[in-house]
Length: 207
Image (tube, rainbow, N blue to C red; front, side):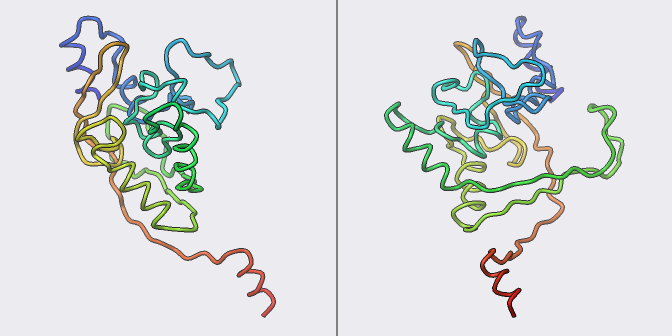
């Protein structure tokens, strides 16, 4: 992030605002406070307020000038982003909702004191998701959205945090910035587990 931000500032004298944190927030699609990034001119948040989880992208941030189209947030759940025409917003939103998963993340390890230095301490994220159809939900999200090189209006790009090293487009007003990023997520392991349904658990409890 530091390297990419430095390259942008060296090439653009008006890019003083571009820092490693500025880029990191756009890679994820959320600010450091956890709120989804919003396009310029959209209502801000008051202290203690939180974004409605039912927000949509097509009307509020169609071009991705707030939350980039290729950010992790929009790839993992594009909502109505992929609608080619306004008339298809509802259709594409319903289609996206067919692939939703229930996910939870748990951090482990001590808080990193300096984001620019690797202190060698073991830390990371335990990611868990629940779904009823592995092919239609988790695997679909991974292959069709996160790792799809031609997602939305993008070309030859994948999800910045979990994909391979490569390019990311960050729209800004009338232009766009393309930065080359190194992936920073290293998977330590993963498993699929079968979890009986509630009716099945009730049945087992009667045995």
